[in-house]
Image (cartoon, rainbow, N blue to C red; front, side):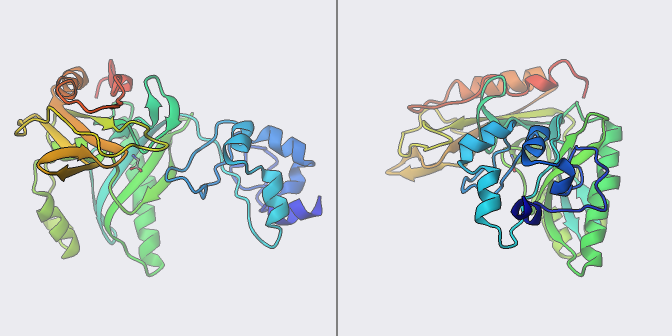
Length: 326
Ligand code: GLY
């Protein structure tokens, strides 16, 4: 009806009638709301009040999860609010983080995380239950395209708008059905838990790189990376991600870090000389290996030494990289 036409925006000039929503199409082009709904695979409302934006895989899922049907939005916020209908990207997501100073940048190696809580990509969405680097699914060609077609134009665009950026740029990218990198999200930070495997591979001094970026001297430094595979397993608290329990005592933490393994603390606190859980993702146990299997084995050896009540972790971190050359 006319209310919906006003609210669902609207780029009628660009709509090719392809019904893929790559360009936000005008509502009229769908004819009826029911037709639009049946054609659209994803509604991602972003501001759901959850820490982790949830991307629904079906319209009905969006309905019940957020109690926020598109019909309600269009009616309740008819005073100029926009509903953005996003393209549904199918494929594997990967992370490309960079040190940035204006239009100069050093890309970090590619990494991939596992977002679902349970093995086999099942269960609720989380910030990430584990990650690894490199990500063999990303070929050197895709990596080069991502830098050429996404990172560089983004930095040039920000500078051209008078907002040159200095800092870490996190690009969450997806390889689409045609093998092209597409943007899922940008963040002005590093990724968690992708950073942990990346830091295991960084042989240069992180502070030198950061200082060079701040001083506008990124071109004077070079980041050196370990050629080995790095893999991190998140050990999460009971109740994560909905309502993580705090205060469980953590036992079995290694007294020192090994050259090829490190336990990164996130949701921990020290009380009376004892380390306890204090957040959802408690630890990220990260290891290096000559290949994904040896890094995985070493990381899980360490995980198995560490205990706290209600601990949950996935046992399949890195499975997508097994058997791929990287
Ligand atoms: N692991 C995803 C993120 O840090 O945004």
